[in-house]
Amino acid sequence: PRYVSRIDSAVIFRCAKQQLKGSDPNAYKVIILALGAGLRRSEIDRLTWQDVDCDGCRIHVRSSAYGVTKSISSEGVVHVAAELIHELGTGTGWIVSPDKNKPAKPYRADTAYRSATAWLRSQGVQSNCPLHTLRKEFGSVICSRGDIYAASVQLRHSSIQVTRDHYLAPKSWVVMPLK
Image (cartoon, rainbow, N blue to C red; front, side, top):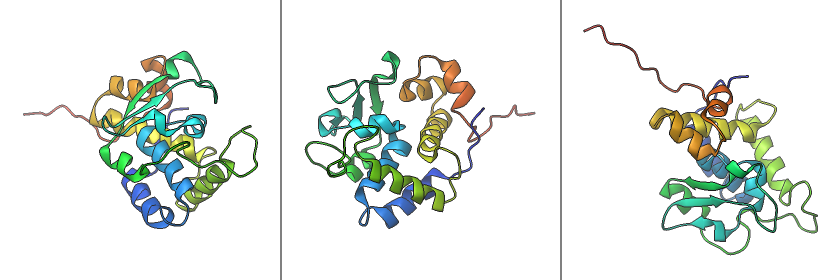
């Protein structure tokens, strides 16, 4: 089904920063990477500091020893706001810290995903997959500020049709002036 936006990304960012940054930094990072970079849960789970180009404001999504991407077209670079890079901070190793003594299947940082999902639901994101809803919201915002091609490239889809059919909700409408 076509995505229908029911959230305000600016409100989600602001509330996550106020409520989670200090108390649950891993959940906070999950939310800003899903909403601010459109990353999938598995991509966030495998993301290391080596994948983040802080100076270029880019996140490299690629297959590695930690796992493979969803598809070949899923590999690529996501351009992000300098504020997102600033909010991530700096470090070495994993961006989102893994759970203690937990195997990597299905996810290394399962506690962070559960916490982020519960928090999103408490904020009114009531879809079956709240983190994936953030990815769709990311695509919708990119499309409204650029175009469908920019959204498709940033989401790393194999075709614009996938982006159009499942990931975009109009944020504004262009109308024909009658003057």
